[in-house]
Image 1: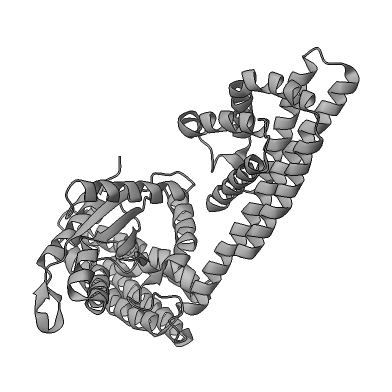
Image 2 (image 1 turned 135 degrees about the vertical axis):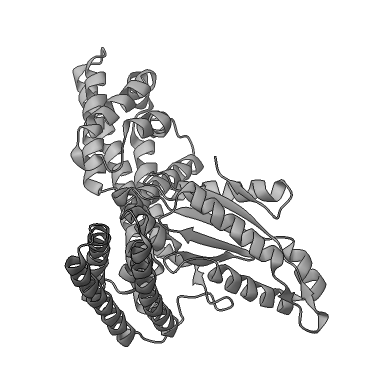
Length: 464
């Protein structure tokens, strides 16, 4: 994939280099005179046009356009038609368009929206050129050059988009084939036990309810089992009929729970007993579907970091793209916790890399024990871990961060014959708040981690 990316870069560098070498400087100056003073208006018109398209509503809002995109688009319009006197400037421009294509892939922006936007942009620039006192023959030539330049740029972004989409899809497929291993089978067995434990707890709580307040009862969709089905099962068992069936059974179980509460409050014994029987049957069916998935498991650990057995960083894009889409579609946030072990270099220097590796593996186990089945834990690099906490609000995410910090402070890490050691951690916490580009929340978490370390370590910082 890296070779393919470099090939795209080389081909479009040649296209653009040729364009700048053969386009008369006077023509580019005419374009700049029409575009540069009106760049902000061109950007505003662009977004006004795009906001009229229903397909764009998923990616654009008035607030997002005003706060982030309008200024960026204004700068981009000027950048496209800027002077470029060297091959280095052309190469830098190509790299920037490749980056934009990667962002489009991250937010899963349909290429037809980009292409429609470019068509509108061509028409807008052409109208502004026509309003200027330019000889007819020159106007035709200049307009053609505007169209050619924008076509090259759009094609470059689209090439980058498809290259990154293919890469993400391969990551997702690799996770589907590689993560269906014995560890998932073990987790399924734990989830099945948790499923029946949920049933016992809610039935007991229903009997204790005096006013039939369903809001105080734990829904199955919010249990470890429900979160695992919503966030991980679809990725591990793509297009699996068992997963689709389990989603339906979770909805049915929560509906039956509401029926039981209402019947208990109304002292309707017959309806209560019928709903309880159906709830038992629904939970049993969900357990059978989970067992069916276990039968499909294949033993392999290729998707995991060899030391910690956690997900490797190369699968992060696939997970975050899915979680971002889920978050926007359902109006539910997720949080990123970037966790860094404090003074880890000093540990390696003092006790040796073998001991350092042992502490990393132990830290991974500690983190895994303090997150839910529906959350994701990655070895992000070196002594850094990344937790994707699903279906969470700010208060809940802060609780998770505090809990992890407390666990690190209480845990005695093994040094072998040298005894034990307390290892603290710093956490950068960021909440996804609806933006389709998940790269922003990663940057926020990274910046928050930097602040946590700068402010003394052994703490969390919540991104603003």
